[in-house]
Image 1 (tube, one colour):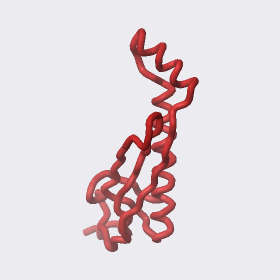
Image 2 (cartoon, rainbow, N blue to C red):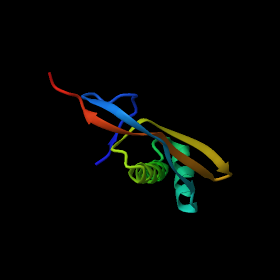
Image 3 (spheres, rainbow, N blue to C red):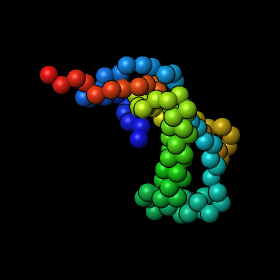
Length: 110
């Protein structure tokens, strides 16, 4: 199991090695069914559940790819994890996850 945090440190652990930056990304496009439902929702308001699901899937995929890179580097943790999105083209967006792969060990107990 790889520890994933969005902080610089991991409580109860100390970083002994930095393995390097790791990243994962995915580009997703909207589909006609989601667009039609979103159009109806825009008339009455509320959550666009189709897009929420799309972003959740994209985040999960980008995170999985980032963790695969960390495993290749023999890291057991990724710190400073961030997510970013950007438009690639009309109707498609990239979701990018990145962080620093490290080796962390439990702090010595006194």
